[in-house]
Image (cartoon, rainbow, N blue to C red; front, side):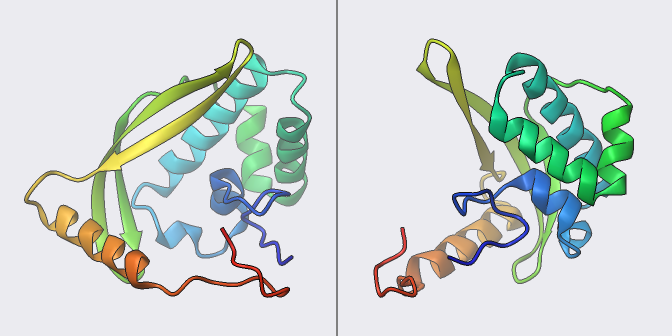
Length: 153
């Protein structure tokens, strides 16, 4: 299975890897410095909540090893609890997007929580039109298959 620098060991996308390891990432967000700082501060908060999480420790180690920018920010010891806000993105095909985001914690056990972040655009705005365009492209893409011929999920 192909694994890019921005996916985890299961092939799932990972924003921290994307922000710090993908050379195209700075073009995707208007506030590049803020995105990097928020990502590191959120990871530090998660590391404090889950100090024995092996995958999280490995991610932090990988980023410290491969990114001077991450390593420098990690050493600052900033911590941030994830709250909603506004992000300005630059999609390479759809153009600029201003989206409101709000995280929701989804408890899956007494000791584990997953976070789902919802991004929305102002109704009737050009941003909403761009999101609809992206959704229509995603809906019309043909299903991809793996090298073995199985459908990818």
